[in-house]
Image 1 (cartoon, one colour):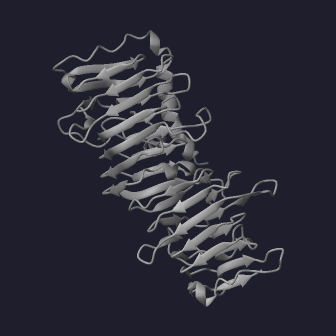
Image 2 (cartoon, helix red, strand yellow):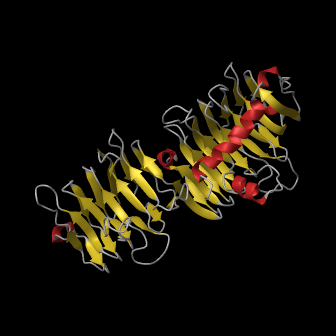
Image 3 (cartoon, one colour):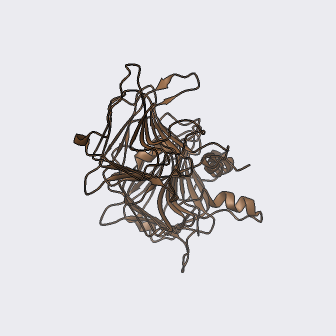
Amino acid sequence: MKRNKAWMSVLLPAVLALGACGGEDETPNPSPQPGGPTVHEGFITSDETWLASGNPHVVKGMLFVGGSQSPVLTLEAGVQVRFESESGLSVGTSPRELGALRVAGTQEAPVLLTANADAPQPGHWLGVTLGTGAGNSRFSHATIEYAGGIFSSDDEETIEFWKQNAAGLHIVGGEEAPENFRPASIQEVTVRRSANHGAILTGGGFAEGSLGLTLRDNEGVALKSTANEVGTLPAGSAISGNTRNEIHVLEGTVTTSQTWHNAGAPYVLTEVMDLGLPNALRVGSAAAPVLTLSPGTELRLPEEGYISIGYQDENGTIVPGRLQAVGTAQAPIRFGPTGATAGFWSGLFFYGAQDTSLEYVTVAQAGQPLFGLLGGGNLNVNGDLGVSVRHSTLSGSAGCGIAVTIGLNGSAPDYVAEELQNVFTGNAGGAQCNR
């Protein structure tokens, strides 16, 4: 059986937390000295500021920031931090080890976190991890480079385990984290030349108002994120030059209203754990969240995968959710497969999805019946929900372009109406099927 990929990434911070236990009894780091290098290792349990005059700041082994005094580590403008091999920075490893990181770079004097090597390579050091106790952290005008490494191991399975969950920047939530855990705000931050991945968000994301995350020239995937944290990717972000210029969305549920920006890379639905079930992205909660997709956004679905806007819970109760996918003629929104055959995935399903709009949207090569019997269209609308579809193209379905389950009032919207200007091509079961 495959490992649970969404929570494998929690293991690294958990291992680090074991080392952090009892940290307040350790010898504190020396105060930064003018004209460094200034060496840091072990534990920071009270407020500390690193000065540019102490450059370079050299970190040996794992450096932990946290404790009962909720320490804050501040890196002033112009600071350079150089990490030894297999070293890293872990902040607030648990709710009992609170801590914060303030990276106070400026455009004129940015902060650099890099490898302590003459010829650095990706993966030289582990990276920066913000755990469940790392609230109120801030990054401004900073670069993280040559991180994303792993601990040494002779076991190939363990090595692969770490590689899948190593990144230059990692935010980790979990059961102990506050609801909608958003511990860090960022402004103009670059993560580059990391091994394995650029950044990973696991149950935690970036704070509202964050702006400008650049993920470039990283090995592996640019960004991996649990579903409800994807929308914290800041506006103005850019993704380029990575081995895989993709945003991997770990299957799950979007429970809060959010916008998925067009960062120049597709969003790819990825399985959490192989249970032999179709991969699903669901949007819904008691708050009826709205998932908004910016013009030009692309979502790619795996074989048999599907998206459910609103859904039925285990008791048959409708959990409401809404979708606003409004593109433009020049920048349409696309839902498509990771493969290239008709019926590759199951399509979009709408339950309790009032006030949902799709305009200038392309949905391609879906229509595989979910669990062998549900749906059968690129779009699958249950009842007269007020789902608006205009100026959109539905093509390559193994079934219908749109499959509509007729509502209790016995009516069904006519999505083929000429005034809607929808286009239906290559759908095996026709343009619209009413059931």
